[in-house]
Image (cartoon, rainbow, N blue to C red; front, side):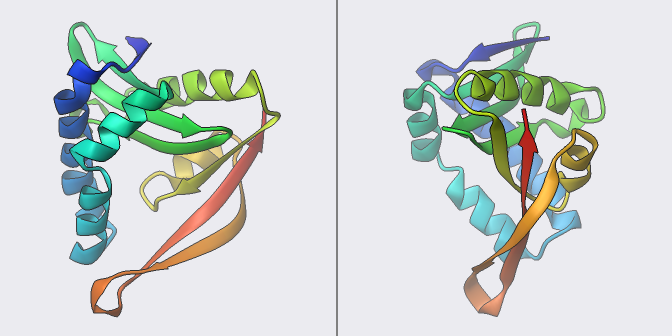
Length: 151
């Protein structure tokens, strides 16, 4: 496995990773409104913005992109792995790379944890420091944990 900085011609592969993971995993935890919210959030335009920032990377297994991660300052904004590659250390590898980059300028990493990922973050030493609530269509609420870790 190799984690590299994303470039613009990887946009479609990153989109596939994000949407495959969201559409496969999130319905097990969230109502349709939340799944739709995350799919819309991770639009092709949003992905290209992440790539342009220089803070988005991809995890490659051979030539295939199997995961992606992104950060903004000390905030880890996304970590996604194709479902068929989950539980193989891919998410941990992405997190290791993101934390190393963040540690170059900050002593703490912050993230907003989805329900499917919160346990992984806890095992990595992240602690819940708050909760966020985001209102969606049909009076649905997206509740998430705000977590941080000293690096």
